Image (cartoon, rainbow, N blue to C red; front, side, top):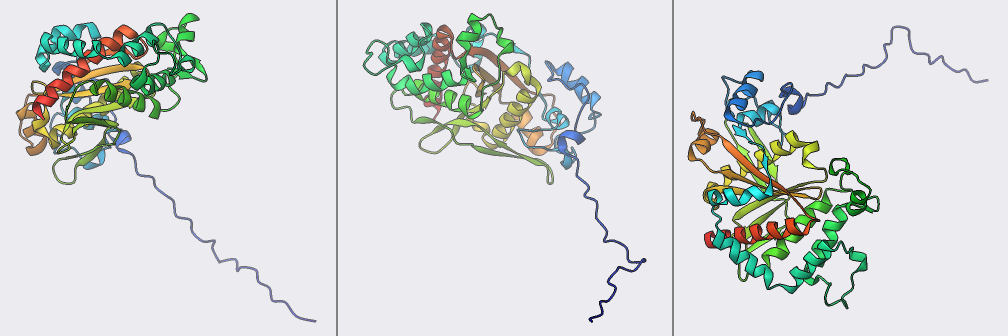
Length: 356
């Protein structure tokens, strides 16, 4: 009979050691400021800087482990970029401020005239005005079929439709806008805004410009290894040399639900764009950002300042800020809102065309 040896492990044979995995804290955790809010003024920014203990730091001396991407910046990273946002102005206020950004009544009138000559545009606006859903539209309906704007209509309608229910039904049931569910996927408002911008722009002849869905990359580099990456959801660019004249950022949720995070991301993208292409602030020295948060569209203008660029790139002392002036929301399913918004878009295209 075979003899089997005792294979028991000796008592002094310790089990193999299991190394503990120490997770590195994220920039968002390390750079968190309690009760963080987007500052509305230089005074608010100074209070935020003090709350974060950042009085003796700049963006070029901030510890590198506090840098997140533009989509997830740390609170301290945002503060050191020297940005503030004085609140959102209603769309009706744009007319009073537009000269500051290079717009005027002549441009807006020219835009209105171009829109008035498009039959597809008129039918598109009619379908919004009369709340006609896309499933009811057919090419044989000459007086309703929106033609080149059909894709924009379908995508905007899809953005405002969650679990099979469109916002028009929610309104009829007395549901407040603040209660609306998020869009089903961020890709939908992203495509909806870009396609709408494309079709509006197509009404202007020989622009030499195009709206693209490309996630355009900007790299913001500071002292040492300090840097972050910014990726937009789309851009308006030249068809000749790819210069960027406007950027696009979209979200599936409404702005008021994630306002600090949304504005901080937009600020980081604008700063990275400024550092990459300071000469492309062609709207009377302002950069232009279009955004859509669920079904609501916003326009943000941010003025280029040489002193701020020098602070960002060369660590020079400055009292300047990147001031983000935002207008909105324009409701993508409201006909009068979209007519006004389209006039601004065409006027912006005419300005960019003159500078391309």
